Image 1 (cartoon, rainbow, N blue to C red):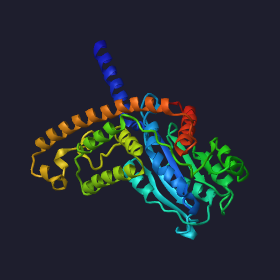
Image 2: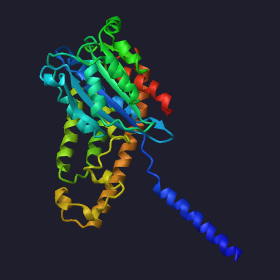
Image 3: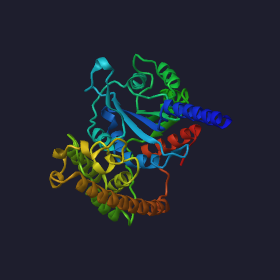
Length: 370
């Protein structure tokens, strides 16, 4: 009798623990959220060019981050402001793209930016991004705004102090990048705008020519990138469009400089470059994916008449090839970084450097490590 009671008690405890475990919400994935607020008035062509050029190096640095022994996700949003081509009733502000992990789409939007004269309202664009974007409430998320421009921070109907107060309430750090002389930025209240949220005040010369250091490994990485593209298997209603976009962003990077093309290839070999919405190799790794639900009409011609098992075998072979190529690119990039570090003479104050340094400093407060 006593043994029976013990068994019943154990069963009740087990059931309670099982029920409790099932009722707990799934753990949120830690995410680095970066909102770029870029001045696209007439004088900012150099800033936009730096952003295009340095995007992939910034992504590469963030791909190495860890929080709680896990690799956080990365989401980037883009706003433009200060452009007379934008609606005046909205403060000459436009959300170019909300938080997204689609790096090809982010690149596409960035390359589409055009400069035009206008009024630059910093407080208003910060407040707009705070209201419109999904910042979330995960305490381990790293929420960061970078606003770059060259006019006084005090312009517009929204006081920058109100905007930074709102940022603090939402656990968002505002970093300011003044394009010009350090003291001019201080007097224009750019430093104050950053200090109020614990952010960094930085200055860059937006028209500075970016010096790219080539390495003996670049040509091989570019060749591997072409092989990497061949491992992608598009599917879905927008799959073909997405794979075309991938190639287009490769071309955009190559037109800027061969080194930019290399840095994009390195990004594509990292964990952050994920295309599960349109690529079968990435999609198969996602929970809930099923070959039975696959619309074969949207596949490449060579796969449309294949059985699900045949497609599965082909995806596995492409997945293996991709992993091997990505590992080779990462190995070569390690050698490349060492080579570049030895050749680098002066520490650059370009957009990439100031952003990465700020992110790493602020990330330490939330136990992010590199």
